[in-house]
Length: 129
Image 1 (cartoon, rainbow, N blue to C red):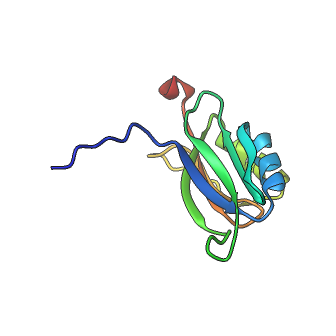
Image 2: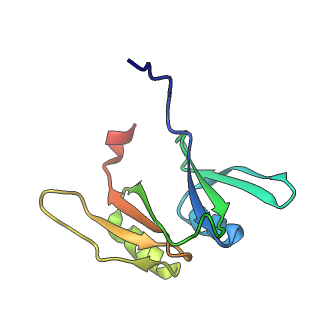
């Protein structure tokens, strides 16, 4: 039997073509810069996170081996899905239909400027404190 030694999810990398443009977008969504450094010549590591979260979103430069325009599978929470839907559209992101089912909280998919898909779901803030 293997003993698990993982203690958490540290970061999730998303390939982007313009790290500054992506940094600005996620900054407008409430993310803060956790780390922004050139680790070696031509290799910038950019991590952002939601205040209070330990998991970061690493906006890494896309390449032939790591193309942008992926379905990230990343689910983000928001206290107001309707307002977030309108704000993301205003920021120039492609937003899917706002789904409002009786059995689930409001949610939608959006694509950043590189076509990377993210999912946004309305959450009760009391659930995350």
